[in-house]
Length: 452
Image 1 (cartoon, rainbow, N blue to C red):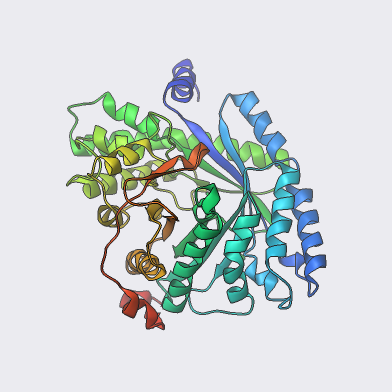
Image 2: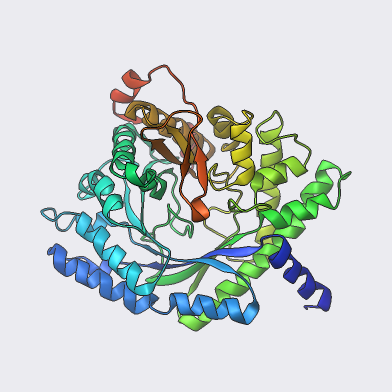
């Protein structure tokens, strides 16, 4: 039952504390678009995406006006395109990327994800061709996002794919160097990728999902920080309780928007992803939440413990608010998209090694990390391998979105604009992991993967 206090509280959260719906994402299966003729397949893709998603943006705008809730992005995710590429081995996979871009342009969405491959246990038909086409695909398109899953708790880590992705990320940055290496900002390497993630750049529509559905991704770091600021002398367990209650309110708003979008678009409601997703805007930072808990600056000793508590409390509050919680659901810690993280990096408090430790207890992984332009492909691959190992052993999703800043060095800045913000170039290890990366093969799955 809503009362006047609840309504006024929500209005205040939206106006003063950066509360918003980060995204409504329509997942669309392209399995019925498979064709041995790549041009026919691309035509089918455009027709299907447009037929399902042509009203996505207008419906999002209608919900914004009706409820007064900002919906920042409207997005589409599709079946991993490598599955379609497998059926036309003589065709150039970049044609699929252009078909996705054409569909995104017609529908007016911000991003379209699914130029993806799942190679955690090995390469099947279409996978290598698609992966090797990623640099060109992200160069010639604007709104297409790409992801590759190279490991899982059940299968281990495909080190041949890890090696290849280091090379692909570097090549993608080189091809888009004239645009501040934006291509690499649209490319994610996963371990334990999930099928219902609404957030870019890693969203794809899993084969276990229905033909079409709507996912919602909420956001509200500013709301959580504001709630904690009211209790400067609270104990840690009291802070956890405050976060749970706040996450409940945020998730209920996401549930409302998702149900309404499902009704208007006449497609099933998938999940609410209750991740705290920051933006470069002042007051919308996960780092600032951690500092509100008592850290002088994010990255100092105690940061991992604070983040672990935050992540757990967000999940506990969210699952009480919706029976459809899914996706990643936790706290994102992207450097370039979080004003507090940027300050911590430029202040020398936060480094890649500390971020790696933090990702063991939160959502995703090393996200929007800018590294020097001369960073080798083997070093990038080793960063991916380290992060994938955390995901594999801890049975959680981890990912790497690292951007080699071509022509720049530590201390310089890449400017992406919009939600992607700006990224200070961070230092990486100077010693080479090349021999390890070039061995190839597969890191076996851990013992606790044998649960059947």
